[in-house]
View (cartoon, rainbow, N blue to C red):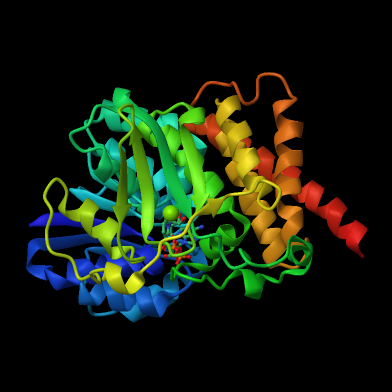
Length: 393
Ligand code: NAD
Ligand code: MG
């Protein structure tokens, strides 16, 4: 029996993970499941999978969770401290699928226990890649990528020498507005941005796909995860979302990973690794697909890509600043305080302000320093958004 915990089990990735676990329930013992506001779903999942403990991130919902689990024998807990504590429960495989920087502390704690961490939470790699890798190394733990592009690269690299890699290309669908004229983007609404042409995902990552901030995070994630220099990492728009990534080698070969846009492939790959086992994903019929198309990912349309490149060059703790400023800008857009095309400007302004202060992004790579910079970046972003919002009135 493998002991499994799922952080963010009520989200899109969390539900897909439990779908796979449920298909082979006899092989797994579910330790901890965690969610946020959706108590009914969290309690239902905990009962169905006979979890030891269910944790909601929201302390005000502890009563509701206790009530929903009454008589089941499943422990209920709430709050950030309880999330991290749940990650100390012994588990062999832990899915990190909380959205945002909130996924960092539980992920690090799971690595500290020596667990295999299936990492959907790209934000923790962007904000604190060096810390995640160090923790994994020190505790003989392993991080397996679950982002589809990074799973694809990981698979293309099996049996290969990373020194022979010339370039890695991760594909981008282009998101909701890929065919809009640039002039219209300033008026895009959160509802329009939250509709993805190919993938069914949580609201935040879907909007990040439309702005390409998701791809920007993924470029940085590629650098951190595989230790590649920034100039070897590229992105290309691929509207069909069937080729997830390509790895180019020094002999000119380009290995592509092709599959349907269904996250259960990447999740299942991480779950079954180092073996491959059958997964319930559609098999592609290439003749009926006919054509795969690619186009340049233009930085005029997607300034987030340029910012990602700058962050990769700057290194240090700039990823933590970038991620936090991006999360805050996204909140501002969702709340209607700033427009869609204001988001990159907010992030750039925050990066400039904070990198300008000596010592900051080159402070020592500790969780405390990451949290401090995350906090500072959010506060700075709030000020920038406040000024922009006033300007709009
Ligand atoms: P989602 O919004 O559907 O789910 C997020 C989960 O995190 C929920 O369980 C929610 O309750 C929990 N959560 C939210 N805020 C929290 C907080 N402050 N503290 C603790 N828990 C909190 O998101 P998702 O689409 O499943 O994405 C999850 C992660 O996986 C993200 O990092 C995303 O970038 C990444 N990812 C998602 C996909 C996808 O297809 N959905 C693909 C690749 C990577
Ligand atoms: Mg991805």
